[in-house]
Image (cartoon, rainbow, N blue to C red; front, side, top):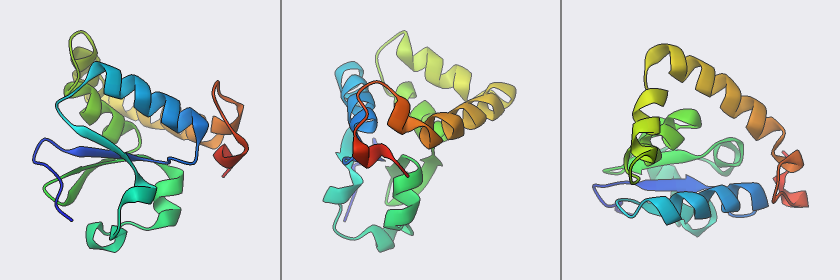
Length: 123
């Protein structure tokens, strides 16, 4: 499978919170694609597994993973409209990136409690 050079954000399409977040990103950026990982035929060609994709979003560019979790979201945000693209660049600043990664892990582990969540959001 070939992903556009602008990139693709893969997210958990079974999770209501993740789907809601992906819908928000789609509304603010059209310079990349957003797909539920469940629609990708050959995850192994990207070095990904269902288990890894249930834990975090991934940003793919040129058939390579360029971001996981908070890094994937930051990369997607840099492809959004202003002011959101600026937020993506701020998240990539090393000290902020460290905090964003911790925050992402906390949200991911508790996504079943987030707005728009479904029973499928439980890890």
